[in-house]
Amino acid sequence: MHIRLIVVGDRQPSWVSDAFDGYAQRLPRQWKFRLDTVATSHRSKSADPLAAVEAEGQKVLGKVKAGEQLVVLDEHGTELSSVELAEELSLWQAAGRDLCFVIGGPDGVSKSCMERADFRWSLSKLTLPHGLARVLCVEQLYRAWTVSTAHPYHRA
Image (cartoon, rainbow, N blue to C red; front, side):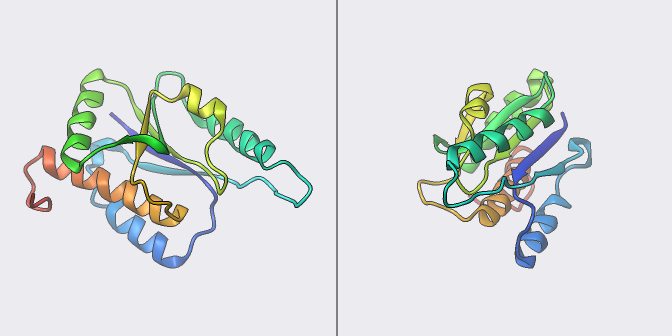
């Protein structure tokens, strides 16, 4: 199983890149984990923000492969404990499909991405900045792997 994270927006503070890279480097090599970015669509005061979200969604969907399991990070999605995420990852891995996570732009994820999603995952009921969501996502993927492999990182 290969895992990708597609995010809308490419400019992040250095602390986001440092933390993200620190966890991404710990992930198992067989996952071939990769971060793909999609540029944030231009927003103006007179433009409809939903048009920008849909444009971003089309770019995201253009990067999603036909057979991939798509997991969209969504504040209204299913909240999972770290152990529950590890269980889901094991099931997804057993299904033999590659896995693609998506974090939308400043105004969320498009309706078309939501419709294509196989699963909607909520990191928290809190509203999180996108950089922090990136870091939490990759940290929880790493933690889920450590749960599955009995690595001492997860001490529940």
